[in-house]
Length: 139
Image (tube, rainbow, N blue to C red; front, side, top):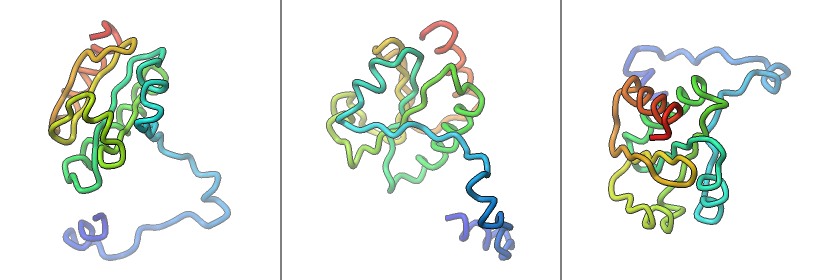
């Protein structure tokens, strides 16, 4: 996808990369915790801190935008928030249990209970406000 976007923008040169010796020591971007049907309860419902779960699928184009937003949330709220991702195609039982009917869907949890839901893409600032409220008030 990025190659196509770069070609469209006229940026055909390959981006610079780190020498092989330096790649291992390069800082990694924070990543959401991948959850499955098998470990959803242990990871999400028993979490000590508020949780945002991104229900997504490979074929869902808007899910890529939300995935980027999840990375931003991790960078900004890191220790105060657990960000998880669940592939609905590989884990249909959890998606069915929470009646996920459209993608992307974000479900907000506090102390094991669903306290909010967002279906579709929303501006990052609005998502950020929802997460800030979740952290501060539990709603």
